[in-house]
Image 1 (cartoon, rainbow, N blue to C red):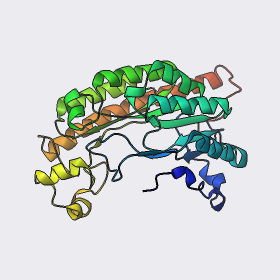
Image 2 (cartoon, rainbow, N blue to C red; image 1 turned 90 degrees about the vertical axis):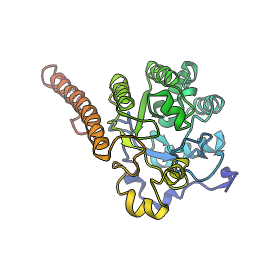
Image 3 (cartoon, rainbow, N blue to C red; image 1 turned 60 degrees about the vertical axis):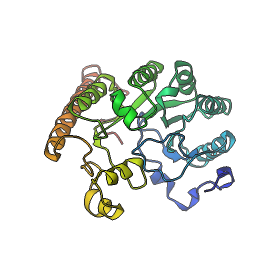
Image 4 (tube, rainbow, N blue to C red; image 1 turned 180 degrees about the vertical axis):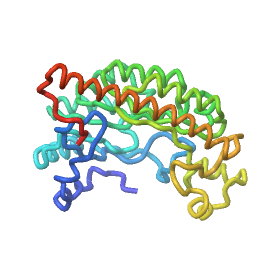
Length: 304
């Protein structure tokens, strides 16, 4: 493993048609934004039972190295939005604060999104993130049941999740709400609680559906599946079980496969209906402002 990743050169951006790549869309990006991902670190401090990561430890880049790469992207390619694409930019309160203060001091003046942890989502931290340009934080919530969270070694409680998401919304930052279904202890009731949570805190930044948990080889959940006779080996997983990430690979619940798919369909049908009904209402409101209010600032219904 490369420990001092600051010694690595920046990606060879000059070898790619960045004029095309920068049209990547991201949550809370506008039609005028140019977007690119930046990798500010490798690894993760936490050990969720379903996680696919095989390497151990967390290897962050320095603040100065990250800022230097962003300044290059701004100057050379006109980037106005950075997607921090590592597993966990918010690896601690201290690192998050240090990075945000660095962005502000460097006057980067651009939007950015990241992956975060809800136990670090404190009002003061979120306020500083907003000031530094953060518009979206993707959170791994995974379940809205304390026993299931404990089973998956998530290191979170439902109280922390609710508090952190409410603080994120209050700060003016959109939260990405990720929930999976089918881990050890999941059932119809835990799925219902997850759906209700997503409906309550949806701010329309992204379409969110619930996917089945997948025991990727190397994860603790993979070895649990083998121990319980639900998987034979790696070949069984890739050749027989894992055919699509939205379909069931291994059923850890007491539901039959048919029952599993039925409740997951009903849950996602509810979430899809909620999202598109709100999207329709929003677009009709735009049309009203345009035609009935003569809104000359309107720039078209298309997203890109």
